[in-house]
Image 1: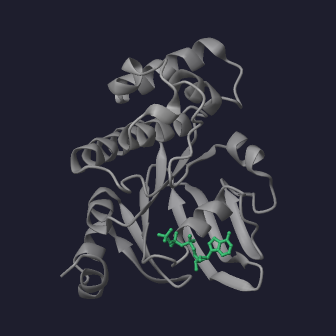
Image 2: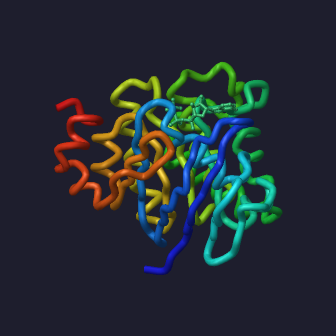
Length: 237
Ligand code: ATP
C-alpha cells in the first residue's frame, strides 16, 4: 500500500515544554490507525502538528511525499488532510447546514458539495432533521456527529479524529465508530485518537501507544489488544 503520511523524528512543544520527542509514525492509504495513550501523553499535540496548528520544532511530516510541516493549516486541508477536533468546536451560532457548508470552504464545486452534504445526512440522519437548528443547541452526541460530518466535507484523503467518543452515550459511540468504518471502506484513511482504547484497537488496522511523547509500542490492533502491557495500562485488566 502506498504511504499516505510519514512522520519522521517529530519534536514539538509549547514554550519551554517539549511534549513530543523524536516521534515517528506512518499511515498507509486505506488504513485506520489509532494512537492511544494516557491523558497528557501528547495525542492532541500530535494531531495539531499534522494539521499545522502546532509547529514542528524538528523532524518532517510528509503527506504523499510532500513536506507539510511548515505549511499553514488551510493549505494542509487543500492537500487532503482534515481534522475533527476534540471538544467538537462546531460553530454554535450557525445552523447545522451552515456548519456543513463551512466544512467545504476549500471547494467551489457546488453541485458536488450538495451531494456530499446529502451523503452526510445518509450517514447521520439526525443531522438532516436538525439542519436548520443552530449548532449550539444540539446535544453533545449530535455536535460530535456534526464535527465529523463537517470534517469530511473537505473530501479529505486523511481524516484526523480527536476523541470522537468523549462524553458520549454508548449507543452514539457505536454509531460514530460505524461511520468511521464506513468512511474507511469508501477509501478514506483515518487517524483516530481515543481514550476508549479497546474500541479503537478493535476498529483500527494498526495502533501506536504514546507515553509522555514517545512511541513505546506499535503493531496491529489485535496484537496490541493481546499485549499484556497494553492490557494492564489501557484496557483495564
Ligand atoms: P488528553 O487526552 O488529556 O487531551 P493528550 O495526550 O491529547 O491528552 P496533549 O493535549 O497533547 O495530550 O497535551 C500534552 C502536554 O502538553 C500536556 O502536558 C499539556 O498540559 C501540554 N499542553 C497542551 N496544550 C498546551 C498549550 N497550548 N500550552 C502549554 N502546554 C500545553
